[in-house]
Each structure stands twice: as structure tokens, then as C-alpha cells.
Image (cartoon, rainbow, N blue to C red; front, side):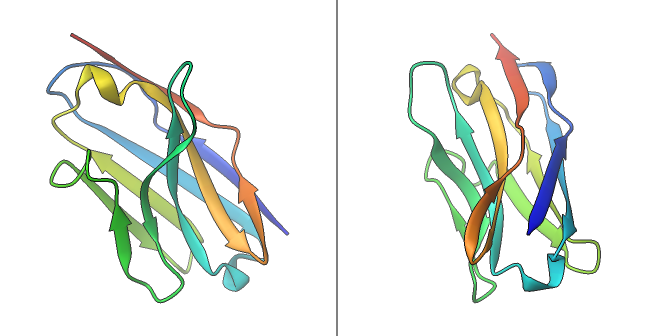
Length: 114
């Protein structure tokens, strides 16, 4: 099992930046894939960026060129650097890890004001 704790959310003006962190504990060396999803009010949860099992990265088209995912395998951590934020990036951001099953953090709110 894996436990995930996100941090780094907050309120920022459009054009600003935030860096999200996700710390994993438990069976961190069994993690196959790890990344970030988000859910805006009234919308379905969607992929933002993730490391796949092969180690490659996948980004949503809407964040390409603005967001960068990175990780520290030794710490079982994954980060999301978000630049040039837009109001439409406003959502609860969730960390996800695949260790056989899918595990989720509690989420961190990101609010971008116009």
C-alpha cells in the first residue's frame, strides 16, 4: 500500500506559478506510475501529467509547455511545476500512484484568479 500527501496549492493570479509536491510513504519502491490529476467543479477528474511505468512522461494538451512534472524516486516524491497559470487551471489537484491498485492523495486546491 501507498499513502500520498499533496502540498503546495493556493491562490495565485493569472500568469503566476505554483509548485505542487506529493510525498509517498509505504511501498514506494513498488510504484509503477505516478502523476497528477485535477478536478474542476462540475467536471470529471482529468489527467494533468504523469510518469508512466516505462518512465516516460505524458501531459494533457492543455498544460504542455506550461507545466513540468519531475520526481525523486529515492523519496517517493513527485512534483508539478506550474507556470503561466490560467483561470481554467483552477481545480483540486490530486496525486496518483499505481501499485497494483490505484492510490490517491486527499487533493490540494489551486485557484487562479483573473
